[in-house]
Image (cartoon, rainbow, N blue to C red; front, side, top):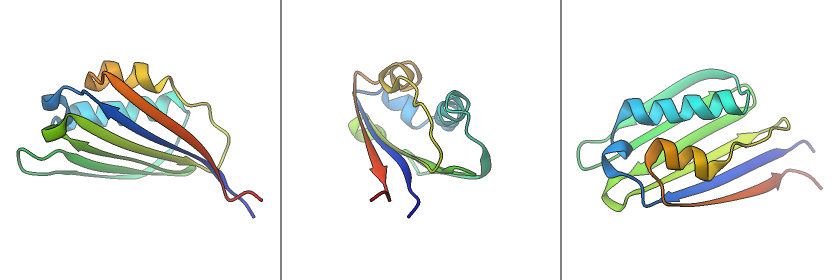
Length: 114
């Protein structure tokens, strides 16, 4: 069975207006794509009416990258799944710079391997 690596990231204490800023969220995803040398096949981005945030997904040749932002709780959640080996960025640095996150929890899971 084949598998991959999945990163689940929770960012808290974010700057609420950035979580509702489509350009800021897309720039963050593009930064992650570049940092991990990923290849985008297609994207979908949905901005919810205020005070809602943004849900976006990038379909990758390696699998997918998704984000959900919650301005009302100053939180963002991300999921990155890659079926090829990748080195993740320093999540706390990237999310701190892009969204102002003060706390970042990231977990890495090996998937589909015996």
